[in-house]
Image 1: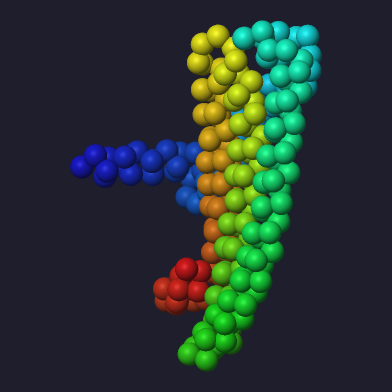
Image 2: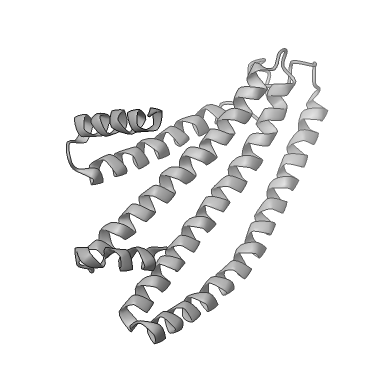
Length: 209
């Protein structure tokens, strides 16, 4: 009953905001999600990692010295370089994997169905892989970027600043990845819908999935 009630409320809200046009609603939600992720990232960025005399941005909670701040930056830069190298190595392998399996998918679907379905299925696979790769890159970079700022805020009295920084970092990844994933998936569906009759939409979903 509760689930039906929630779905009913959601349906009425979506109808009230965008009428009967699901495209506007989906794209609007995706864009809002990406914008909100950017807003949270902007708040995280206000924590400075540079030496400064400003007590609001320097490590003043425990009277950290300039030397400690320099060490923190060196560790941060080393982790950042390591993360970048890891992503480059990982995605180099992923690119080969995606290319090989895209060809395999195309050949198998073309053999069992036809070339058009093989091409569309392989295209969906490649787009999904690219979206996943972009999402992974965003997640890794945001995590590294935010960890050092969480450490800085942990030096201040209380736990609120460091908790909020870590929480906002998670929200950046969550909202950015969700918004990006929904947007790419919906755009694929919109394009594929033009290529299939309505009675063949189950086949279309097979290509997408």
